[in-house]
Length: 474
Image 1 (cartoon, rainbow, N blue to C red):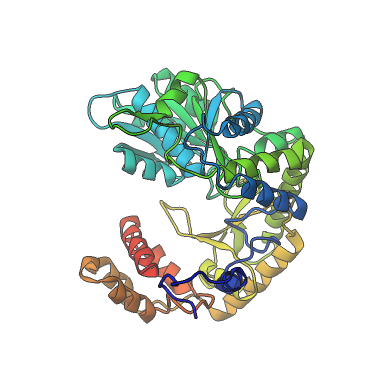
Image 2 (image 1 turned 135 degrees about the horizontal axis):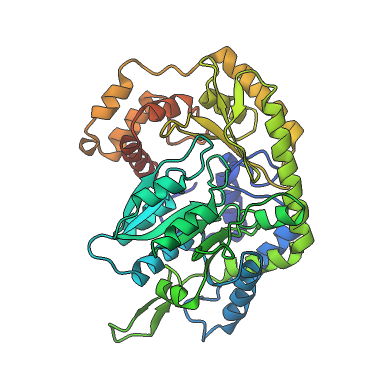
């Protein structure tokens, strides 16, 4: 029987692997295209198998000291160089993911531009929460600016938000929620005119937009070749199809990259110099990213990007044929957000109905006038016909089921609840009362929970989500 206690003697490998397989029974599938978030599948098993082998080959190599393991320098130079070659040049750092890449860009901007008082970053409402996380960790203030009716950052609002304490302006290429491109040249020009650095978050789009441009699609300027853009983040574990975690942050000049580094000589131990947030870390992800990039190649990425975008366009056309549903904005990459204008057709119920049919559609809550919706990340292996059939079937079932039944007064009660008075067990009981069970491995019915969260202000949502995570791991 599984136990939380360490065994006195080691268990057989076959037994451990069998238990690991059992624990994965309730996981979403990582291949096949039925999960439209979190995972990226080329449909090329040989590429994924190669990446796993390369990962294992470098698993025990420690990136802490590049002088001890020069292979990591060779690998990182090639990976970062390949990204820089496609995204306007510069020098960079290989990181564990978009959040770390963004963290380093924010740190570099802060350290390169000391200000009186608390430094600020100016970002559109659609910018990724990683910027809020970086601001929180690094002691900056995040200043929001609104987006226009097409969900694009507003250059005039950005200019109006700048103060003497602004050290960084943010644009997205594209923003994740609706897949639309911010006007990067205009935003970067606003930042440059004020003597402020500009970061382009191309975490999700950075390794698909160049290949779409190669395929003849109209891709607006967004990378380090744009005047005023001083840093850019690009995740290779998204449309680069490398295993997690693999990302690159590029800087327009080497001096700014050096501001991302950390060194400490305030102790009597080994020399500490870090290019990233982590110190000791496995070289496995770096080797896997290197292997994936070289195995897929430029033509492979062109084909994958073209296939994914074609699927997205087919999905958008098909959504128009499903009564009550519509696409938000005009996606520039294979990211599509679908909302409902019919009160009788709830997107959160659609998500649950899809889950019951073996599909995962990612729910997104309403924010600053943007309605609740379902997010679809399409990849080179996505099947538009099967996806549309599943969406239409789930929508039909959701219409028959009706909106989720939120108990009267529950939203108000949660808004006023003193969560600090509840321990994790008490909070788990509260979740059970609204149909969410933290154990058991069954597919959760989340429509009611999402409807409740959607009705609450963001600050209350954040508090509840933190408590949920704490109770889940208790």
